[in-house]
Length: 161
Image: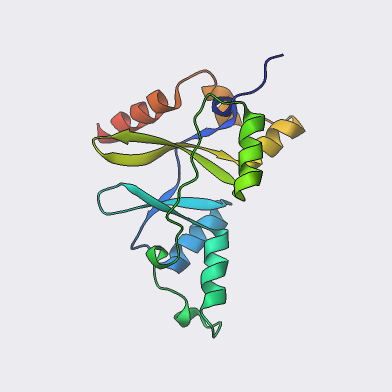
């Protein structure tokens, strides 16, 4: 049996928000969709950071008073500027090690075109756990063997039609 690669477990399509998204709204998205993090896009659609559960709690802790009105108003004030990235063709076990080493639960596959970088796919901690438990996600099973960038571009074209 050959080792699983990142592309075998990752999800195509990534949930995003804008730098101007209110922190409370982005936090609701994390909770509603059971996500660890969101990619933050600027006005041009370029990925500029990550906002996750840890950043939300850190913003609350730094507020000083603990009152919601003292928490930074937008994700731009609380996001991490470094986006943890990964190529699709490395072993999933190596990616799991990178998650642990970097202290992150999401690793992103970024696509760059025309000077703009945006997220095409994500490998989540949960994806690794599902694989270990023998419960592959329906989406990743259906898309296996297809290029993440090809799938992303196809979805993008379909939205623009």
